[in-house]
Image 1 (cartoon, rainbow, N blue to C red):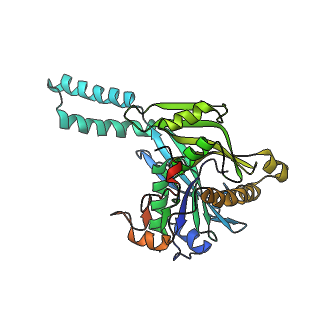
Image 2: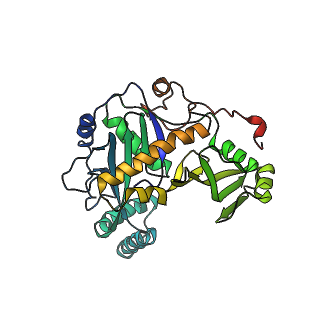
Image 3: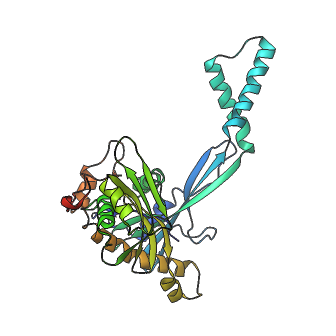
Length: 330
């Protein structure tokens, strides 16, 4: 189910129930775009059943699904429609429309075209682990994650989250693993990596389907190219790509997991398998990065909040501490 993970720590003071979450989500159900509406978003039943629950619990794990829809209106089509309107004004009145009038014509053209535009839908799995106090979003785009987090904070009374940070930054840790050619306990390094220079050149080196335990990779790191992506495998059960922003992408369950699951499928089985594996991977990954950097996230959520974003922290409250500075290449 989950192909990506952005992980948040839920404030300790929030002790909401599944029934409260369901009631809150019912206030913002997804509705398709209207004829002249460009975008629409909201919650849909995660089981895919019409009029089903918006918050499902499987094995104590809460699963939600966020849906968004947008109208596809190519700029070339819009510009052509605006030009047609401008040409009609020039033909009728013998003058060219000014800048302000052209802006009005653009709004008119958009309203004319939106009812005929194709729509594009995308959805995001949202996982709340109430016991571990974690919120996990299935996206690799921080902007989309911010939208969902903001909606949850506005809907759920007392709900606050902060992006998880770690004692050692993901970038420093990945650099150390590539330099020593040793992965942390329980993990192995796979055959994909991206290195980016920190200087003005912004030079990028990418390896795909290539062994990384070679001198060339180590020399790149020693010369100042820092890892931004690194493919890894956890416990021979889950493969993924770790980024320097502590995002987990390209998640794939391996044969050891799929063989255990057998042929039985369905929503409950998929949720149980995915959350069962990822709920073990997440703490192991944090441990490999020196543990979490926030020791009192409940307080941090209440105090380190950007203006206009009550209850939400979308970045580290302070810079992560590098616990092994002598081993880093910078």
